[in-house]
Length: 308
Ligand SMILES: [Zn+2]
Image 1: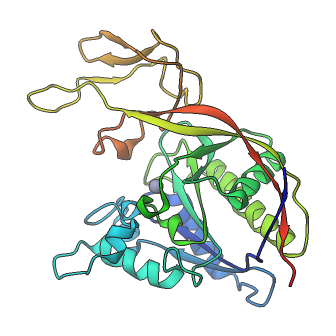
Image 2: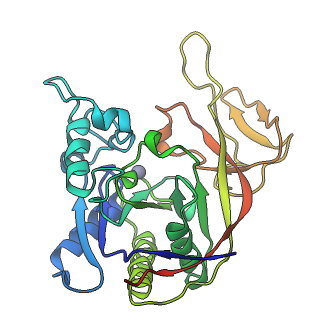
């Protein structure tokens, strides 16, 4: 594959507390804010709490999910007196770190999340982006435990999450951790991922050449809801014990996926796919029991910084 050159990546935003009860990013951002950042170095880093009122309340959000507010349509719609708090905040963050899709936007926006699912360290991308895929490859090479790459494949105008505001965007998602709880092992994993991301940026900006190759990625295929009572809408089953905590283990037709509260097993029907976000607490309201993905190898080119 060819050698691709990119301009330096000098402005980086690290955000936490986009979901106010996902505490690893909240405490990491507060810690980063205590340190004096070297603004004149090859990488200038701004650390920000994205949703402070939700952090104070230790809730995912106040009025609506902030991490669904960054589509082009929502960012361009005028605010009114009745606009939800998070939509106002999305406009502020877009002004501070974007505007989304503009040359003024930060070079990389890294958003820190936790999940109650047993996903370990996962890196979520919305498109095929050589910069973020190289960061993923670097983290995979430096971290001994699995580092999964999840590609959502959504047109940029419809990408709803905060990281879409940067020229390049990356969500770091680590679990399992209950929302409202902070665990040292998860914190250490997040710290390592953020430090290695900043290390990669320093190396990139100072002229390192990153060889191309293949990156294994899980490409979003579809979401599965819980079985529900057609009259009340209440769920009638839980994730089956054989699926619980088995994120990224291939699900075959006939494998148990739910156990009803009358103790009947519901089996998976469909092509073999990889489950993730299994039993994520915040997804009950979104009617998602788990997502399914295909596993692919993505080819990425050799990249380095463009010199004037
Ligand atoms: Zn989150």
